[in-house]
Image 1 (cartoon, rainbow, N blue to C red):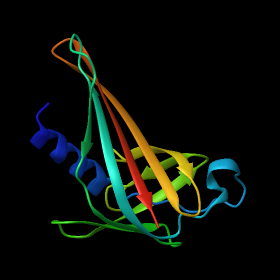
Image 2 (tube, one colour; image 1 turned 90 degrees about the vertical axis):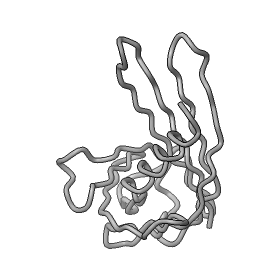
Image 3 (cartoon, rainbow, N blue to C red; image 1 turned 180 degrees about the horizontal axis):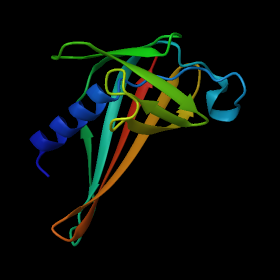
Length: 145
């Protein structure tokens, strides 16, 4: 996968994922800290596995902010692109982001790997079959306050 394709994939992922989640009052662990507020994208890493080649891992240049609101919406402003707003919901450590307002049509599902008062790490793993081979893309995005 070329760097240009990788950057485009990550941009689409982040744009569609306007990452946000609501504090769930009856959950513990990952959601103990609140993600409500404005976060700065500190970094993004993509690991691409397409046998028979060994896995390739790249840091992807990505900057901007994501603001999580208590009303279940999040606004992402990725540097160089227009800001977008989507809805989100959270269950345990699973964050589901709607494309616009529709959770039923191909939502983005992320895992909250860690959440503290000043750091949020989101992870997504996608697997698809390409010309008979299983291809896996793992994306990790780190945000800070």
